[in-house]
Amino acid sequence: MNNNDIPRKIIDITGVELTPGEPAVCLGKGEQGFECCCDECDYFLLCFPGFDSKSKDD
Image (cartoon, rainbow, N blue to C red; front, side):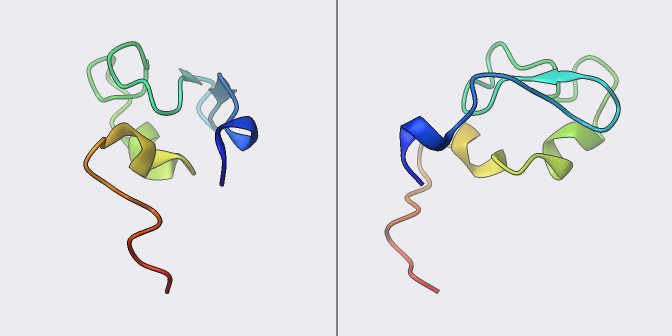
């Protein structure tokens, strides 16, 4: 997946606006009372800068 494929904002199933890859501003990071948002986000791993999607090709 390249950066052009990542939406800037998405709305999850609970109606919370998520900001993939930007945990500092994302409303779904658990601090707003919506703890399930991160678990359900398709872009969850983008919020972890140490994760390298190209390091494993399973």
